[in-house]
View (cartoon, rainbow, N blue to C red):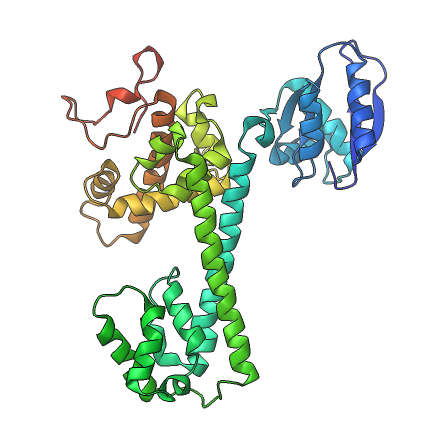
Length: 413
């Protein structure tokens, strides 16, 4: 798969000469390719390597035509190519041969089309929210570490968190200390009052702002200078990112408010609206994973050990799965460990008991909590039961009977 064309290699099960062809990334070629495959008159299995988003249009066209699609792992393709050809030489024609070989031996994965699975909108919401959040963070840091350090350093202590739109609105109106001291105390209070919004001891806060401006050591830059104009432009950009993120979160909640899986995920400690959105967008229907270990492997949270002969390396996460899912569960575990009265915090306490100052042990414990978070998310969706933090049982280990797998086996929490 590439941006402008796809190299295709066709083999019939009875053998014979393989057919090689090039399909350009146009509607005519896609339709013609689908018609040629349909003319074969037998079940067709199509294997391909996912390359960016270039494979999405052709894969959807073939899926709607009724063909079975199989996904080839990029890592497995590279390792197989090196083994078959004893070298690192790579081109599209050679990749087509290797993909056909892997398709023949069954070294493939199931392909889930986001549009056909109904998660395309969720993926766009999740990815756009991530992009806007990163840009908002970059803008926020630029304001704190550059503009405020030059033109109003003392006001940074009032900044609050990254969602503080009132603070950006305040410094957009008063970007320098001189813009505040040019007014008397009453006039400044009258202008700043609607900008700050609802605050405890609001009058005291405004008075503190005025006193801070009077004793500021900022650069003596006039308010109508080009530098302050650029400062206000960056502030307006940061405020727009805050509003865009709020709008995306409202759209996501409105779309998923009645979604059963979304409601089940929201009951798990540490999983909020955006984390639940990301899990559903990246994993789709978690019921397609028959066992929680399959879902852990999909997330890259399965353990891997490099071993040869008498040598045995350290056991660590494989990290071959979905990085966004892995990060989402990690962040959810961080939040759950700080909340009260849940099994995640209790498990962290058991891991770190007697080793409170051991940072490496705590990191390993948080990794275990991340895997536990993924297992619980899979279990509550697969079984359709709400998360229950604790359940008294006669045995030493706490297991929730609502999370029972088939034939009485229990999903490890």
